[in-house]
Image (tube, rainbow, N blue to C red):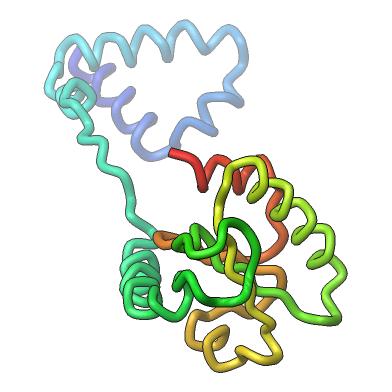
Length: 170
């Protein structure tokens, strides 16, 4: 019995599961029985499978996110001041800074959607031309138009109004 158990352990460990798939149908029950015997005789082999695996979320973008948040905090007065050019209620603190450029194919439609959203939700939107505000756009890492800057995130590229609404409403 021990000899058969050792054989099964060696076969499983050395050949791997791919080899077991190539077994003739008549050999599979024998291999299955040998594996079962090994597991019954050596329950410690299964111990690692019984321990709970700690589920921790991988924070792949933690450093970038922290950098963006620090950047947004530092530039907030230049992005969200109520007296900057834009649209929506005058005198209100802007909910979003919208970066466009003249030769941008998506900017006009993105602005039209954003204006409708601003009217419906009563939000102030500050506008920036990436050609005139190159230094600010560069410091924020905005390399495409349109781009949207919220107090807690940067969005690069055209976004559907429904996505922006989710970000702009609590």
